[in-house]
Image 1 (cartoon, helix red, strand yellow):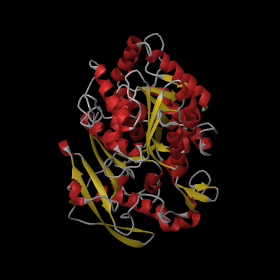
Image 2 (tube, rainbow, N blue to C red; image 1 turned 120 degrees about the horizontal axis):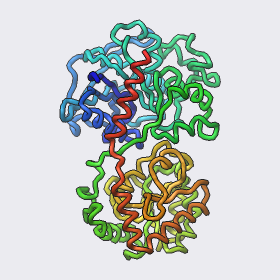
Image 3 (cartoon, rainbow, N blue to C red; image 1 turned 180 degrees about the vertical axis):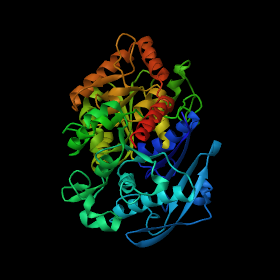
Image 4 (cartoon, rainbow, N blue to C red; image 1 turned 90 degrees about the vertical axis):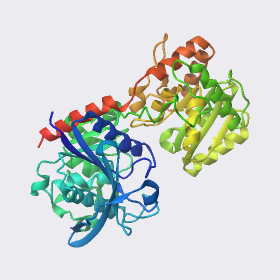
Length: 480
């Protein structure tokens, strides 16, 4: 296989700009691809106003990016970081358009991410890096496939460039008024039902799906679910039309970053051969949250974004039964105020059983993974999920709803085999039933140790997924 050139285009990359799992994927997958040895890859994200040049030692390309959108000329700068082996991440800088204090939620987001798309392509030209594939992530990069098939269609520099469009979460689509279309540099001939038109608006997610050569989601199960009305977010018909070019590849995690044997955030390090050392982390976690301490008390952890998707109301409704069973609950997260209030009331009503921290705290998150016996994810939908992969790495047994990537990564524990407990419907009684199964195993110490060992020995590192993405790139290239 010849070496191929790949550009990642995304709105987030950990640790520089992050709201969720997308940032981790955009950080870790290029690293795994680069290790394959037959791919050159660089990543492009916006340089938001909060990204500090001096903190990350960003270096500036000495030549500016110059391009026009609908006849209006623009100049931009690109800064970069170089990693081991020469892999780079580029940050597109324009104070007025991209350099805001936040990432999303601005009235001109359509224009901001159209600007990013054009700047990404012109950066490739400036660097003389002819991409075989541009890997576009979520709606923020949805216009790149459109531009390749319209204004760059006859451009010899991009004539052999294929696109892969990854759907990380179909619920967020980037829907904007159709009147913006001329300002994005796209002709009205593209405003058709089978292309960009969406209920008399334009939809960046639909654009990525319609114009890309190959589409994928971040788990096999989710790639099938989004072709149904229940999970398709009104795009299921289009996804069924493109089903021959729609794939599912499970996300991985970086096993160097997430390693309980070396994690400096933990009170006591451990691995699958020293599982008993988890107990010290558990006692410290109980103390941190002001809960009664004891190795015999089961602790269920939650680290999450507080949103409807995550099924958090199900946990709240199950809390009384959990307390009756003697199961403690620790929750870390930020998000919607409604769920913050629910959990704060829960902690007040069940002060001996529930500990809450409404914050983003990476150190505490790691301590929850290490100190919890169980890990709850009753998601209504979950494209892939990274938390269950991390929890297994740290020996916290996942209790999850059977949906999306949770289905693909957690195997029901039966007769010494499997890695967790699954339930079908988003209801508190089914969650409680799964927790009771887990508690029954927890009370048999040898059986529990076997289950924890199974979790810690499971392998969801990026290596296998990187190979699958390489195959996907080859498929996309072959379609040109």
